[in-house]
Image 1: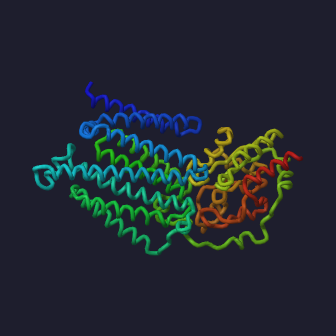
Image 2 (image 1 turned 60 degrees about the vertical axis):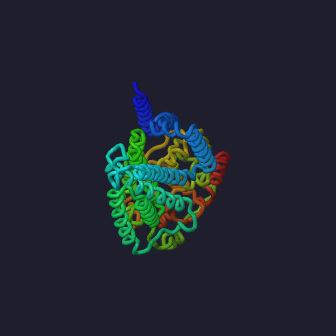
Image 3 (image 1 turned 180 degrees about the vertical axis):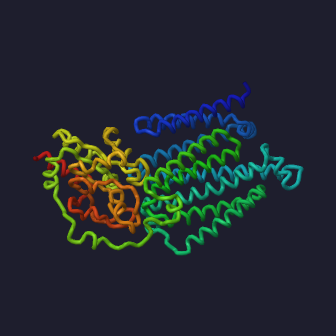
Amino acid sequence: MSSQAWINLAYLIASMLFIVAFKLMSGPRTAVRGNFLGAAGMAIALAAALFEAPVQQAIAARGAWPVVLLLLAGGAGAAIGAAMALKYPMTGMPQMVALLNGFGGAASVFVAAAELWNMGTRALQSDQPGMAAFAAAELAPWTQFAIATALTGLIGAVTFWGSLVAFGKLEELPRFKKPWTDPNRHWINLALAALTLLTMAGVCANPNSFLLFLLLVVLGSLLGTTLTLPIGGADMPVVICLLNSYSGLAAAAAGFVIDNSVLVIAGSLVGASGLILTAIMCQAMNRSLVGVLFGGLGTTTVASGDEVYAGKVKSASAEEIAMVLEGADRVVIVPGYGLAVAQAQHAVRELADVLEARGTTVEYAIHPVAGRMPGHMNVLLAEADIPYEKLREMDDINPTFPETDVAIVIGANDVVNPSARNDPQSPIAGMPILDVDKARTVVVVKRSLSPGFAGIPNPLFAADNTLMYFADGKKAVLDLTAAIQKH
């Protein structure tokens, strides 16, 4: 076989590994193996790329310097990635995912910019004038190259800056805490979108204009920023999925720019899976994608919780709750972002062990958008070696809450707010929730009565069958475990 045939075979093997990796990463038991296979596929793709004709020509012209640069860049990227993985706790994973999405979009923009610059350089060196020279410099039809370059610049820029804004919101940086609520924001976005599309058409018509490409990137950057700024915290799990899809689409477009099949396949897989997950998240929140992008859930001003909570909230101590749990045959634990912040997953496992030793059945209710990204709670509980069979999805466990003796809500808020079911005027009306209020007794572990991402009060906290346990999540669970052991 020719050298190109071997390269294509390596790309095919890498693509197959990517597909298998995606399949394995759909379940917690096989996710680690899937990550390793995905990394192996990427290593094979990178190694194969070294034998592509342009790379070999660069090596012939400049010696080993291109390979040294590649190794240095790869080493630097690996070091940065390892440092980020070690620095960020599980609570920071959504922020890290947002950054990684953004870096993927930025990398695609740089690939397209570099290839456009190279094409322009070769066109200038050609004997043919104008567009003819540019078209002659490209091996594939220049129309494909022009459209792919424009798409890469636009999607990559939107992804990068949108992801940075998402990072700021998730990290709760001061400038990003409050959503952008300017009443003219939709008109601003519309004007930016129109300018962006016109510039994109200009890049497609004149792919030899590097300045037009830069203008497209700038407009895409502004559009990514202004589209993400108004989105409230309650919708961030959906936004993370959507930005992940954007990063894949940008990579796929970059694959068409450099005519690389494995990049097209990998980008398409990421783009498609991101869109599917976005649809699942929208369905879980009973929200349309248009509503997420333009509706501003969590951006509206709502009344304070004084009327909801005044004189109705019942606070309890660890000893009082322990006495309630003594006679419980079935307990359901509902984890939320507060549990992740407190790093209470191991303490929860200890509490469950103590209860199960007394003959109590313990299960975990998982809402699709609990935490700040899809699967956040599943991964968090897996860290504490909690059996996956005990994690029950919302649709599966909701019918069983009326037969539940005690539901323990740890740090969750909006996903257990009965206003979504009972109040048609609520900003989260219609959003599927965990029906914990139907349990015989509800214990809510929370630092305070502060609202969740949606910024609205929760009537559950003032319900007749609810006991509030105000404390840090980890300390509260440890104290509760100790109190149970005393009885």
